Length: 113
Length: 113
Image 1 (cartoon, rainbow over the protein chains, first blue to last red):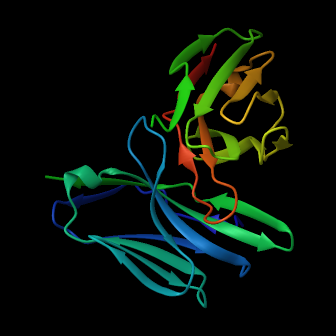
Image 2 (cartoon, rainbow over the protein chains, first blue to last red; image 1 turned 30 degrees about the horizontal axis):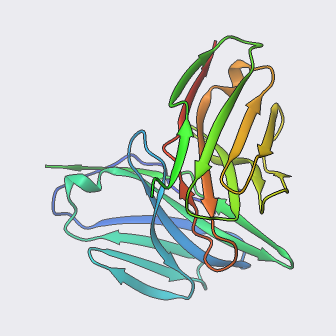
């Protein structure tokens, strides 16, 4: 079992839909959680960064962390064609003196006009 | 600020040829990373440099070497390219301490025939 699981999709939604992207993880030592967005033929860029359980909102984007269920989500409200990209979750594993960044495989999202 | 730059953008090699991928950042970041990204495999860390003068192996270092030339530059060398090294290569950088936010370059697409 991988440390971080993310459904690769593809996910296709109409413009204006609410999108839900998810990752699950197996190790309770994960402490920091991030969502990156990657447009086609570009490098990933940080979208959201969160530490604690609960919700963090930034414009149309909401990052949710549920540490008890080992589950994180990214919600996109009023989705736009410009949101079409691959979304990667990433988590920091704190194990003693070692910090390790673990990536999900990414979910491909297409928002259709 | 240009951020993280990578050269070349695209390269075709024959099996056995060598090449060096160049990366530079102008954000005064301490840590730099080399990843490869393959379909179904996600981002995998090849090598990283926590600070100038140090380099360490990542998840998939075999067949690669790196040089941290100075604080700005981190190069990746393929001594004898193999078809299995066909991939998209990303360089990233991060400020020491604080958030684990990595800033990525635009990538180098490498095809080994």
